[in-house]
Length: 88
Image 1 (cartoon, rainbow, N blue to C red):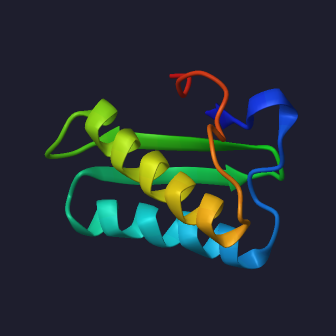
Image 2 (spheres, helix red, strand yellow):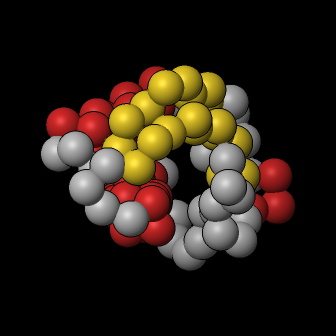
Image 3 (cartoon, rainbow, N blue to C red):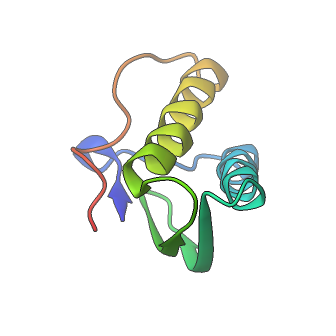
């Protein structure tokens, strides 16, 4: 589970959701993780995953860092997007 910092909306438009899901799909395609269930709400997400050929921390870092870089670029903002580390 990951939540937007200060209850920030982390999925403002459909392009945001598509970016997040595409990044998740790439990780799955690489065998890094297997997604059993997911839910994307405006200010947070839930993932039920099983790790694959890399550590969960590595997969989540790749997913979230890449997402934030594109999100910030898309919405002309900078800085942190997520509150603390994802929760397990």
